[in-house]
Image (tube, rainbow, N blue to C red; front, side, top):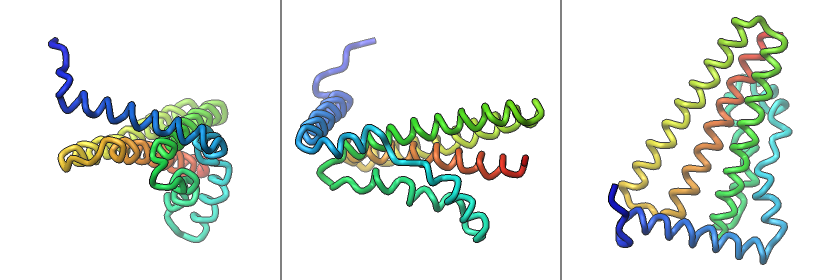
Length: 176
């Protein structure tokens, strides 16, 4: 495999990402409170009550994502690196919740039901993430700035994981 040229589009994207992260770290130094928000990701503690309320009101439970992801979307436009970091950590939090929920189902439900939940959750997440890849490729086609593309992709990935968790939550409530 040949080495990438320094003038290749990939080299420019890498340089833009490095600059983006460096700028974000400079903002962290200027505003440490924002950094802790970004490092923690969105607070997902209200997920179950929001989903329960939405289901009772016959509203789509996925609507809860806007409320739950609001802290990551509240960063000012010049803090894209911090917003991106917030979405990265929010995705990690959703992934941990999915794993925890599947573990609970494995302990309390029949093995066949636990296997079905595992398969359904995995493919829910994969199909959601596939849409994030599609959006990223379209953004590249329209030459969206790398910093904006990265933010969009991480926001989409956090939403993808959140939707997969919410579907798992709603489905598993019927097991009780």
